[in-house]
Length: 159
Image (cartoon, rainbow, N blue to C red; front, side):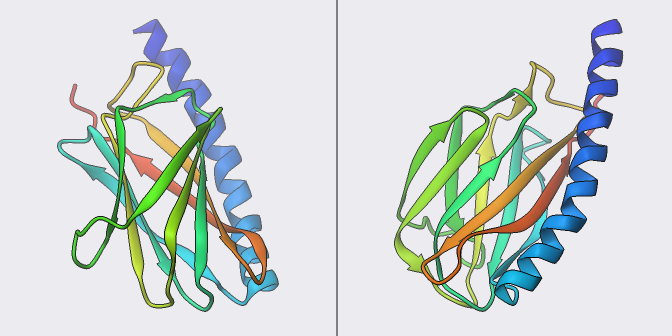
């Protein structure tokens, strides 16, 4: 109980910080790139065990996505699929400290929505009743790295 109370407090601080940064990053993305892409939706799958983030490609193709999660996040696998067809999108993944870099074999074209599925996701061993912030960045050859926004994934509370 105490562990959960402490984690909830830390999670709340992270959410407040992420929420404040979301406004800034969305404004920056729109101002610097004319809306290259957006974080469309985010949520959970498989009774909250898997997290997903949908990203729309809007005005400029992009080659890479970078996802930053500063909550000591653990997961078992990452899938990257076309959100419309659920077909895999060829890519490579490079994992760094608190970040996931996804490089696509071919640029994602305007109009496409990519779904990133983070399987068996937990934060400090907790998988339920929390909100996990993911900051999303895209890389295009024209604009370089562009902040797209923050996806907040709220996991179900199974208590």
